[in-house]
View 1: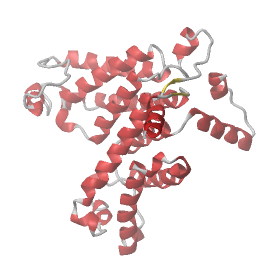
View 2 (view 1 turned 60 degrees about the vertical axis):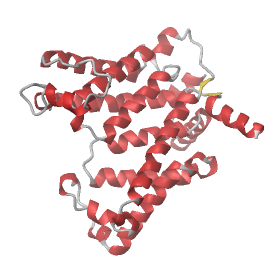
View 3 (view 1 turned 180 degrees about the vertical axis):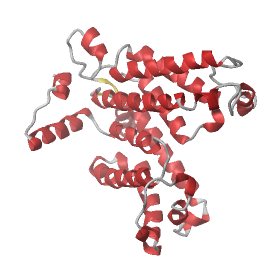
View 4 (view 1 turned 120 degrees about the vertical axis):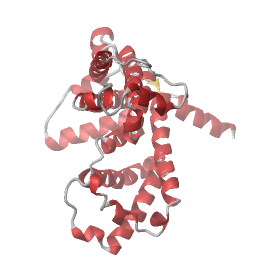
Length: 307
């Protein structure tokens, strides 16, 4: 038992390459920029007193529950606009890895505040994205692939960092998938293998045309039970290194199909962003080397970062 506990402790709180969290930071930075920038188009509708969501509705959303909201009681939309602009700036700084810790903490606080300003409009993608930003904020995310390392790293590569923030993303991702399976299995349509037939006819989510055979009974059965199996595997078997690739490939295909067929902005990209944290720096570099040899081109970006 002691040996098992020691191994578990090393796996969760041990040390390893900063590369996965560096790549994760960049991906989350891009997604944060896109997500926040979309708010400029709907700013009048959701963030002003003349729009669909005035402050009194925002306050009703919480029902008296304490929360992080730096805009509590603020009705001047110009102040809200300043917060939105600052959040975009913080996302940009986090993306390039400049003052990474300060920028990511600021982004988390600003993003939570903006989300709470129009809480009724949020979806799972918004909640998950700010969880990813939190993981970046508490992790050694600026240790590589960043301007912080270039300007303040004194030319020395950071060989090992604490892995628990990376593990935090892995566990959060597993919880998301497990709870998804748990909740779906409580629905009759999922247990009967018919759920994906009806999701395809949700007109408000229609995006690109889907071939008719996808709504045949065999395809629907495979799609419904296959979704449950893939999501359950992403909550469990993905932690096995030999099985991880065979779990992730169908998961990526599933999310690609959902992203193609259903208009759920950014959600598939946000959840897939966490996949990188299931890999170690050595695995990423080995894959990079294989791609370099296969295509006969040499890029010094990753190599220089770990040299």
